[in-house]
Amino acid sequence: MTELDRGELMILPDSAALASEAARRFVALAQAAVADHGRFTVALSGGSTPRALHACLARPPLSESVDWANVHVFWGDERMVPLDDIESSYRMARETLLAHVPISAANIYPVPTIGGTPEAAASAYEETITAVFGTDSPRFDLILLGIGPDGHTASLFPGQPEVVRPSNALVVAVHNAPKPPPTRITCTYKLINAAANVLFLVAGADKAAVLREVLRGPADLARLPAQGVRPERGALVWLADAAAAKELS
Ligand code: 6PG
Image 1 (cartoon, rainbow, N blue to C red):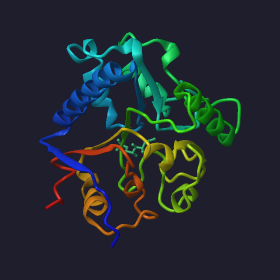
Image 2 (cartoon, rainbow, N blue to C red):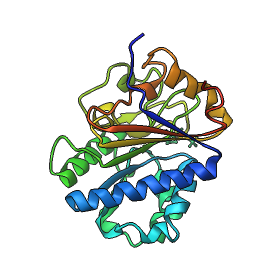
Image 3 (cartoon, rainbow, N blue to C red):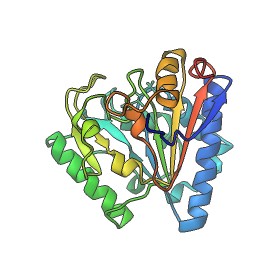
């Protein structure tokens, strides 16, 4: 068994407490990043779990604790649908967070999901990221991630090419994703593992088995892509509610 750096695990009583703790950490990291280098770069996650986090950040006191003018928002993955589609992670973030805080539209970087192939969208997004960071080795201050019952994270799914043979790209196209919509783009391990902070949010009993496998089971990255998240020079934190953590000793 290859010992992985499994990161720090914090178990919260319920999903509301998990969202509050995640929001508290988001604010603390944002304040520290702006103080340290003048801006906070964050990649949001799709799915349902982040909604409660966004709600905490979208209202006082936390909404007033972030210097939104210096926050730059990206996505760790996105579905290849129009930005106003109900399945769009951008739309979810806009409705639950971005429309409620004084962030400049110029500092919000949605994935260009319309008008081209998924591969073109991935390349364009990679160019956007490297341009905003001013380097080919971007280091996000924070990347937020979820995990699926099958062990996927972002849009890195079991058995998919980028999981089985990680590339040197920062963003890639995903086809035939088992979680609909099937066509996506995703940040790669190379980009994720360069981050200063990676924060997994895991809530609900349906995640209990996979969380045990990912954190306590043998290394099997092709089957459990979330195990491939190991920031080289960054902090890895798992926030789980009691329901998701119930199979962890
Ligand atoms: C997506 C996400 C995906 C998500 C997990 C967990 O596009 O849906 O990027 O990786 O984080 O599937 O989703 P839930 O939070 O809905 O359980």
